[in-house]
Image 1 (cartoon, rainbow, N blue to C red):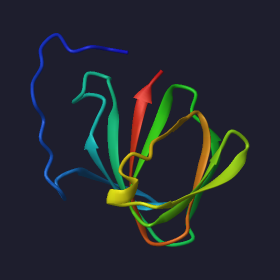
Image 2: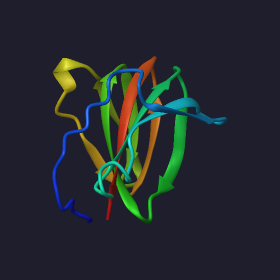
Image 3: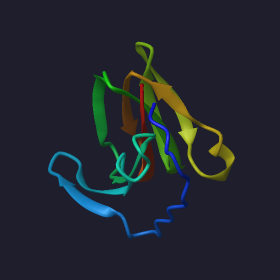
Amino acid sequence: MSTASSSRAVIVQAGAGNDLDLEAVGIISAMLTGKQTVGALTVVWVPVPPDFGTPPGVHSKEDELVHVIDGHVSCFIDGHWTDVGHGGPEMAEFLAICRDQGITLLEDVQLTPHLLPL
């Protein structure tokens, strides 16, 4: 992992990310990029409609950490689907770090995926 030679704070207000149109997913917002974090991580805000999901996939160059802000999700981790319940304050500690994963959203949710270099 890259490390910065000098630290500086970066604050990105809600709605101030760099919007990207991914046709299959819709509009996502890059809140922090690898360039801003000297390759340490990328933070992407992904509002997702109910019953939408990503197919199971493998990240070859990074791990993915998903923080569920609100909603109800099921994650495909280690070869099987796991219902992780509702997001929000009671689930603030939920983190999924894995290379072989997929997510199905069972209700309207807000996800914040963080891509971490290997």
